[in-house]
View 1 (cartoon, helix red, strand yellow):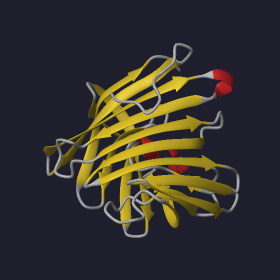
View 2 (cartoon, one colour; view 1 turned 90 degrees about the vertical axis):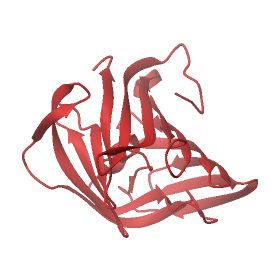
View 3 (cartoon, one colour; view 1 turned 135 degrees about the horizontal axis):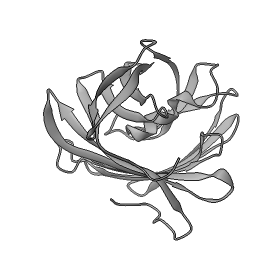
View 4 (tube, one colour; view 1 turned 120 degrees about the horizontal axis):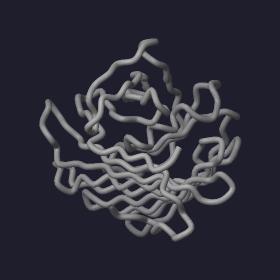
Length: 227
């Protein structure tokens, strides 16, 4: 697994895992690995390596999220390579504003976005979808990274209206990562995008995802070191 910021000796690993991406039941070659660690004063670091170098896109995403004790992302650093693009980004999320700096192929830009209190945030990976449920229930406004790869605003911050809710009130059960696990499907939609997030009954962490275009991701490894 590759990191933007390497783990330090004072960090305590809480959990780690891996997702495999499939389409029509066949592996795409894309793999997502993640590690969640505890640091001081209740803060956590989430590191994600979404490696699609062996998939048709050939893209790579690296994320380093600073998670506030309340469970929301306070800061996100990210890197992207692929399709002739090299992007370095940094987002600082405050209660009613987001400051985002991004360098794409050597050109740097900055955004300052004013947002309503209680806005949501997530970033484009299965682990990143976990945070769609944080920062309150209303209003239905989120700031996200533009996941349409190829233009000058690739992975720029954007404000969207969204919906996020459980599709059933019960749980499904299936074998995932070598163990029968219960999960609840949540529907997340914005613009023309759709995600069904399989939230674990144990702690709400995503153990799988279905995308509107048929791409799926399922946890192939899930390790919890502490509760």
